[in-house]
Amino acid sequence: MNAKIYEYDTKVYRTKITITAIFCAFILAYSLFSIFTTNVPALWVVAAVVAGYFVWETFVSIANPSKVEVSDQGITFSAYHKSHHYDWNEVKRFKCKPLASGTKMFVRINEAGIFRGRYWVNCYYFNDGNELFQYLFHKEVEIDPEGLKARAVRGSEETKSIKRGRARRK
Image (cartoon, rainbow, N blue to C red; front, side, top):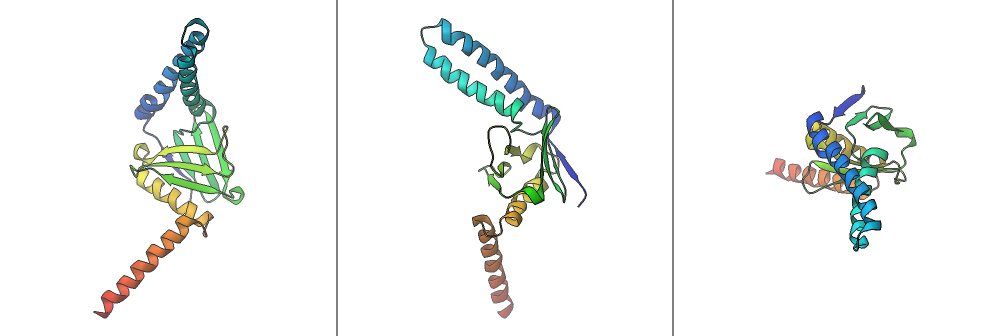
C-alpha cells in the first residue's frame, strides 16, 4: 500500500478545533487572572482547568489531528506543523474506541500519555472518512489478534459462515 493521506475539511477544522482552542486560550488567561482578583476562585480554577486541557490537547499533544497518513510502514498524525509518527513494527498497542455516532474514534497508541499517543479522529470530516474508519478498526484487529475486538470479528464471521451453510442446504 502506498501512503494514503486523509485530511480534515479545512474550514470545519478551523471552526471546530482552531477557533475553539483560541477561545479557550482567552478563557484560560481570563480565568488565571480572575482566580486572584475575584471572590469565587474555585469557579475560575474549574474554568482554567477545562480551558487549559482543550488548549493543551489542541496545540501541544495534537490530539485532534488535521491529517492522518497511513502506509505499510506506519501511521502519522499531524496538525499545526507538528507530527507524531509511529512505525508499525514499533507499535505494541493500538486501541480504537468508536463513539456512538459511528464516525468518531478515539485512538490510543502504545503507552499513550499527555504529550502523544491519544488522538480523536472524527472520520466524518476527513476525506474518505469511512475508509479511514475501517482502516483504523481493522488495524487494531491486525495488531492485537487475540484482543476482544478481534475475537468479536472472528465470531461474527463464523456466525455468518454457519448461516450461509444452512441457507445452501435448504
